[in-house]
Image (cartoon, rainbow, N blue to C red; front, side, top):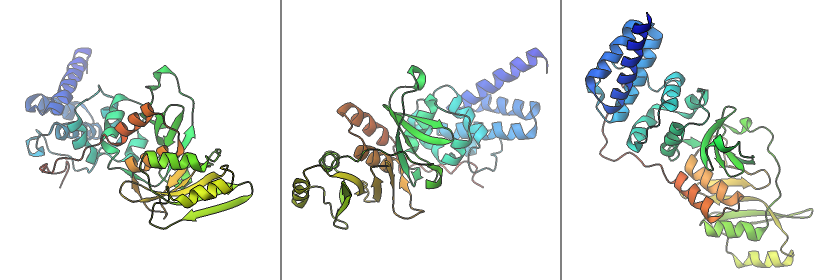
Length: 319
C-alpha cells in the first residue's frame, strides 16, 4: 500500500472500532471489509474478534453484527491488549458485557501493566473472578506516574492490587508465591479490633508468646469477642502475637490467614474464592487501615455489579 492507502486504511479501521463499540453497522462493515482485504488471515481473524467483542460490549445483538462471527470463546491476548491499551471506556455496562470474554490467564499474557481500561475491567471482574491465594507485601510507590493509591497492576506476570506502600498479589497458585517475606505478628488486641471493625468472624486464633504457641478455636463459631480471650491476654501480659487465624468471608468461606507471611487462602489445594472476598478479608485483617483507605478499598471490592437478570443476549462466538 502507498502512503495514502495506509492513511485511508487506518482511518477506516479506527472509525470502525469506535463504531463497533457504539453498535453502528455501516462503519463497522467498512472496517471489517478493509481488514479482510488488506491483511493476512490471522490478523483479519484477530481484528474481527476484537471488533465483535466491541460490538457485544455495545449491547447490540450479535445477530446484527455485519460479518460472520469468529468461532472463538474468548478474546486472545492480542485483542485484549488492544482493548486495554485503547482510549479509556467509562461505560460500566460495556465492561460487564465484555467480562465473560476475558479470563485472568489471558490477561497475564498481555503486555499491559497499568492502564485506565485495566482498572475498568477489574472493577467489573473483581466480584466474579476467583483465586486461591492472596499475598500482601510491602512495596514502595513507583512514583507519581504509578496511578495513585489503590489501583490494579500486572507486575512480572502477577496480578496485583497496589495500595499505599503495599501490593496485594493474586498469584495463579501457591507455587507462584516464591518465598514469602516475614512480618511481625500483630497483638491479639489489634487483630480483634480489626475483625470487629469490619465484621469478620474469626473461628480460630493461634497465638505465640516467646517460645509457646496457644490455640483458641470454636469450629464454625465467631470467637472474636469471647471474654475468655480477655483472660488469656491478661494472663500473658497482653503481649501475645497472632500468627494465624481462620476467618470467614462475607459468604462464609473459610480463609486461613498467616499474619507472619501475610498470606491468605482457603483450606484445600483447589478451593477458590472471589477476588473481592479474598482481598477484602486479607487486607482488612493484615493491615491497620485508616478510614480513608478503608473506604477506598470498600469502593474497589464492592464496585462490580452483576449483569441484570433480564440480560439475555447469547454469548459472543456461540456456535
